[in-house]
Length: 64
Image (cartoon, rainbow, N blue to C red; front, side, top):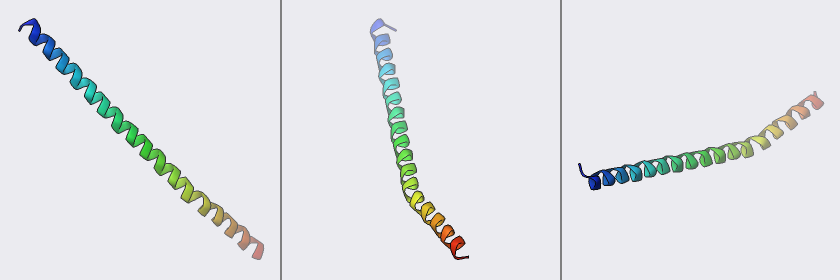
């Protein structure tokens, strides 16, 4: 194997590992963002319903 072939193989491997690493990071970023968004959405939907449930319980206790 000549030095030229070796250099080509090394650069191809480097490009491949960099692109794979970048793809993994991108997937991780998208996943984290979507999970964060889902959690925020759940909190946004969940908070008012919890507040409403607490108010209902207080109302029922007052009426009882």
